[in-house]
Image 1: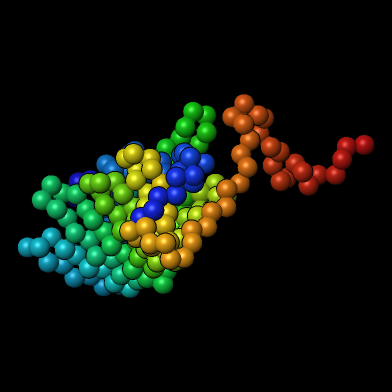
Image 2: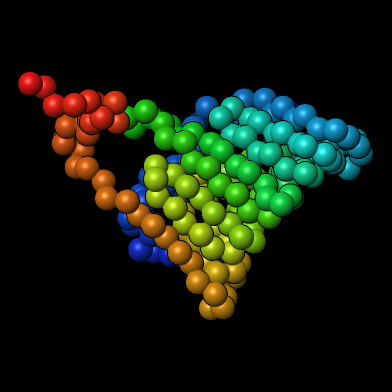
Length: 188
């Protein structure tokens, strides 16, 4: 197979957060494992149920049920549901910095190959590099590197979005000592 109220302040504070996908992911094959599968080749729809594991490059989804559709051009759309669905993906390296893993969960997650979007619905949470965002709807646009969260899709004012943004060291600052180094007794 070939491959909303936006939270503007958060998008500014986490400029790389939406760059979740490695560019190479879009050219990788999709692999899916499940307890059961049914497929309708005429409609290009496959349904996977029971301990479903979806992977494509560094993208990984774990869900109870995933419905996969393939359009006429071969692009996939996957809709995963579970309690919760778990998502994991690594970003491209930037300069000397390695790619960072992002992890998320929600009751439903949708991935669209063509638009390069990942959407998390209901009880959504994304963790990246010790930063965390929670809301009822989180959208990650990998093409434009825009990340948005809202209390509900469509920008409902009901509820709140919550974000925890950890302080970051300046790019030219030396790396902080690792835990093993800080646990050593002082030299005598």
